[in-house]
Amino acid sequence: ARGGGRGRGSSDRPLDSNFESRVPSRRQIQLRGMAVRQAAAAKWAQRRAAQARAGKEHEEGGEEGSSDVGQTTADATEGSPGSPSGGGSRKTPSSGARRNKVRLPSGGMQQAPFPMDPAFGMYPPNPFMMNPFLMNPALAASMMYQNPALSPYGMYGGMSPMFPGMGSESSPAIGRTRSGISAGIKSKSSKSEGETPVGKTKSVKKKKGKEDDDFPSAAADEQDPEEGFSIGAVMPKLAETARDDKVSRFLESRLSRDDVDAEEKRNIVAGLIAVTPDLSTLAVGGRVVQRMLEVGTAEQKKELLTTLFPHALRLSLDAHGCRVVQKLLEIAPKDQMPQLAAELEKNVDGCIESMHGNHVIQKCVERMPPESVAFILKAVEARTYFMSSHTYGCRVVQRLLEHCAPGVLGKILDEILANVTKLAQDPYGNYVIQHTLQHGRKEDKKQIIEVVKGDLLNFAKSKCSSNVVDKCFEVATSGEHAQALEEERAALMAAILGEPGAASPPILLMTDDRWGSFIVQRVIKHSRSSEREQLLNQLQAAETQLGVKGKRILASLQGQGGQQAKAS
Image (cartoon, rainbow, N blue to C red; front, side, top):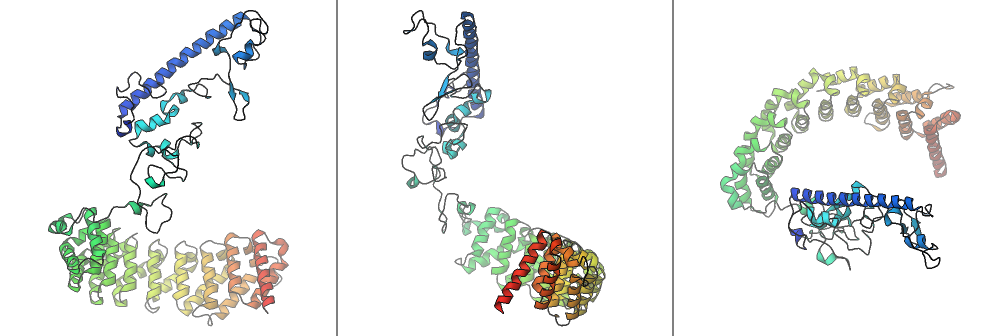
């Protein structure tokens, strides 16, 4: 039963060499396992009973040498009265009362801490090991897998320590070769010499440009989207079947290929125009609609715009439809933009706050003329602070700052400047402040720098507002209005250095802070030679008070000074 033989409740079908082509049912596997476990348990109970009887007889006989429990039969009888050397009758202790020795790889012998059983090898009696699949994994592989080479035992060649002796070079390679890939998956020409792979499967086609095909990517196994389809069979029922993913992939492939006749592409576009609103909300169907907008004729594109514009709001709030609307904005002529704007204006706030719709509004700001984005400006002006600190709304505000003239953004900029402190410390609002420093008016930049300078230490030691401090130094050093901001820059630098002779200048308090140390490094980067010298003197004077980060900054600053001295 242990070797996979037939037991009570097992199937009458023998485990012949062709068994791997037939997969037994789950019930058959359960019955075989139960039979093997019951037989093993019964045999073990008999063995324990025999051991108990032998031990009792041994105690009654009063035989000497009981301390030497590890003696073999020959050792126990040597020198006894019945042995050839000692004469007398010979009494051999029962095999169940002794403990065997195990032979070490070096050739010596070592005492086994438990009774040996040839059926279990050197493992102790354990119900876990009575599982026939653990005792004979090859049996389990052949019973549960049509192709044993794809079983865990076949894939890993029995290399688990649970199965001693398996996976060695002398044992046949079952499924996994020395190169690390299943022999059943590798091609016939790649078999290693002397290996006997179990099971054969199709060899994986090597992907072009890949040298190592041990683990082929999913793209290599992906089926050709045009396999099993023909344009002649699809065209009669094009509109009805286009929602099917396989048909959509076929159509996408035909529209994307350069070697497909232009007439065929025009016919596909013409047959799908009526169903594009519903097709746009599908993962593959949305890609087909985008291809239609790219390859269609001028008349077909115009018809597509007319068909999709009434559904623009619904599609903008959809995960796949929003991509179609963005494609519409890329190809639509300027004279048709107001029609699309009128549709989105119905729920512009919802679009701005939507995970998908915000991308459409950003594309509107980028592609539409200034007069067509008035509905977006109006929505942002009504709730500037909320939009600036919103997860998705902050993106729309940033696009407005990038693409709209400062004169048009007067109300929005005023509201931003009134909340610089709050927005600078907000996870999303700090990006709006940075964009204002980058694209705002000169007066706006001065006002923001003035606010930052007033509480520089707290701004620099905060995760979000430290980005704003860095941006202030950047725009005042090399930005568009750098010359006009020279005075503000000098004030920022003085705020960093602190008052002369101060016991704890701000730069000292910033050096060992997680975010403050970052600002010190950025200040050094944007500093000039005279300012760098002041920074160095300030840090050297307080070297004993510096922590790990501060000493690292000081060493870096000293290294820069040495390089400049050599260069001069």
